Image (cartoon, rainbow, N blue to C red; front, top):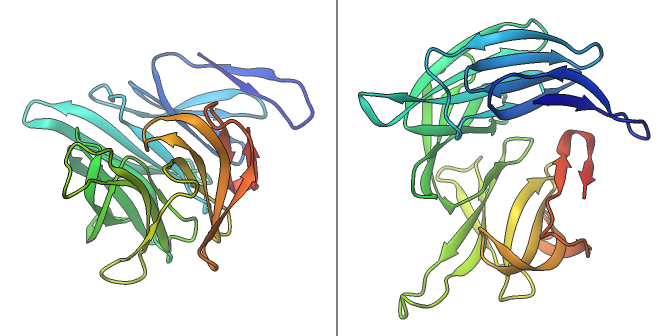
Length: 276
């Protein structure tokens, strides 16, 4: 595995070589963290210097993930096998980019994925992930100590993304027919206001129905939610209807681009950039 860097308008250059199986990466400034099955490695992009941040006692599994936050922290969730836990456990911790310090927060039962920080920056939203892609809650743990703070009742299936300001949660969902269990379920987006308890839910019906939305991501100012739209379902689109944006204030969706969303595109909310 190799790490390449490319400035806008410049040529790509090889920065570093990475050994092992790469499970996820996260970028904060000029620091790239690489989550491998054996541990976490730091790459300093300007000079390509690499250093080990953390070594895992047991190999991390494919559902492990990293999350970079705007305050210079990168949270990790490394799922490991455990003979005493059927679904394994997840080691959750945090890396401080400025100091280079790593601190464990908690070990969660089963798989879990960090979603983002609470509005005050003191809590971390964590989504329990199981074999079933549907979920019914999001946990909040203390971002400094790892102590449990709250459990929020939310429903969704598949994707879940927290807004940069920590106030909203957007998830994909499906609604099955009560009268015809064999009918194709409706594909929806649920928008939760996490500042209210219980979290207030707004239901968004994707435009140009019957249609489905996936690849959800937020604008840097949390005022808009972007999504890929097409025919199909929340897991796979088979016809592209373009890239759309949902304005939170007006509660209206509009098409942003006719780009073929069946092809992968990458977003960078921190840089206000969408790479198609």
